[in-house]
Structures are given as C-alpha cells and as structure tokens.
Length: 299
Image (tube, rainbow, N blue to C red):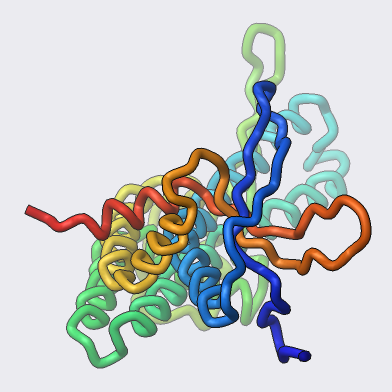
C-alpha cells in the first residue's frame, strides 16, 4: 500500500544502536515496529524539543557577531601584511569593504530575525491574543526602547536592505609598534549616509547627533547580555508549553526498557537482500533527559 507524503512504509520503528569497546557502532537492533501514527508523533515531538534545545534562534545573532569580529581581525592581518593599501591601491580596500558590509548586514539581520521568529514561535504556542504573546512583545519593546544598539541595528538592517549597503563604512588606523605595523579596522554606521536616508526619524536623529560613527561590534557587545536574558525567558516559556511533546519523547524512551545504547527511529524498511543497515534518525540523550526532567512533578 502506498502512503502519501513523508509517512513511513512499515516496517519502521524503534532502533537501538550499541557500540563495541572501541566506541565504534557494532550492532543495530529493532526494538519494535511503530504504527504510522506513533512514528509521526514521536518524530514531531523530538523535532519540537530539539528545536528549542539545539536550534536556538539566538545562535544566529551570536554567530553573526563572531563572524564580523573574525572578518575585522582578518582585515587587520591583511592590512598588516600590506594586502590592503587604501591610499595607494584603493581597489584592495574596496574588496574588503564589500566583504565587511556583507558580514555587517548578517549581524543586523540576525537581530531582526530573532525578534520575528521568537514572536512567531510564541504565537504558535500560545496564540497572538494571549497574555504571554503580549508579555514577549513587551520584552522586545523594552529592548528597543532601552538599548541604542538594538534600535540602531534593527533600523540599519532596513536601510541596508531597502536603500544601500553604503550605510555601513569602514576605516583603518595603522600605527607602528616595536618596528611593526599594527592595523585597526572599525566597521561603523555612516552618519552622513544615514542623514540622507529614509531611516525612521527618531533613530536617524539619534545616530546623526553622535560625535562619531557608532561601531557595530561595540553595539553588538552592548546588547548581548540583555538579548540573552530575553531569549532565555522566551525559550523557558516555549518549554513550559511542550508537555505533550515531552510525554511523547518519554514514551519513545520507555520502549527501550532502560537498556543502554543510542535510541533512534528507523526510517527505511528491511526489504533489501543481504546485510541491511536501516536509515535512521538518532536521538540526543539531552532531549530525552530534558523531557524526563520536565515531566517530573515540581515541589
């Protein structure tokens, strides 16, 4: 019988994977065949819990910030080696500036993406008209109102996407230290460009009124702690609303009767000739552990 979509063709089920003394996988044992409904329920539950545990939207911000820092360090090293000469070979500087602008856009976009996706997740879990959704939206409003870096990066993203990447600029300062040239790149918001842009008036006035171009890495550093705090609070709310997923994860783990080994769901039928190793989706023990902890009664 043909089953539409991604539903499994039996037999598919719970798979126990064990290793030998060297740590190499040595044995696959099918614990049981799963009905289509359970197969789908267990897979969806694992995806939901692991998505919060390992797929944090915050990591995009953290990674983008790290990438911009690395790009600046690489530009410094290239300038130290004479590969960037803005005064005598401007094309060498232009190439690096383009790269730095692209990385800067990634940083700005990660801030906007984080807010958008976390609100979507809360809406899906609790509903747009819920008090929880209003609470989370209020936390993002507080970030925007309370931290200039958050305002600047959010609005800079819109200008870079809808107007020009030239809203970001870079400058390099070179000094002689111990007989060696040391270069210091700064990637900043170009106040002169912002002054002519369509950026929201209040934030535009704030940026243009500064004494110097704001440094993007400094802005990102300034919002890291408050953004982390908000992200943690939201992820806790999401976990609080996942009791059915935790229950399904625990049910799947119960199929193994406490036996040691890696739990997995087999995804392909054992219908081929000769030795057969089924395709499978391994389950992280961390996902199982958090499901167990969340299901324990709180004192």
